[in-house]
Length: 106
Image (cartoon, rainbow, N blue to C red; front, side):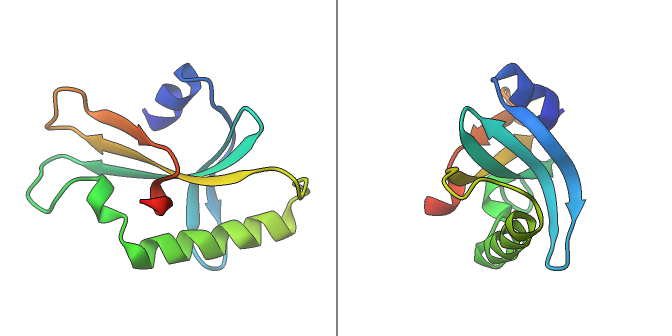
């Protein structure tokens, strides 16, 4: 669901479910020249908070370390911009899918 939504928005997914030493990267995609590491979070209810809120500081740190490992093991041009996004899927919402670009800066 997240991948199809991102592709409709113009992202080009280049990897999914990448297992690394520090964590798993859900999606790695290009949006124009920017390399995006995308965490996908799904919530069927808001009982434990929103999907976006579930990406806490500890989870962000694990994703950053995994992204660094991905960059060191793949041939990615050093000048390419890198960004961390979140696809939050809250099934109880009227519009359930939300893409939060540059989510770790907030």
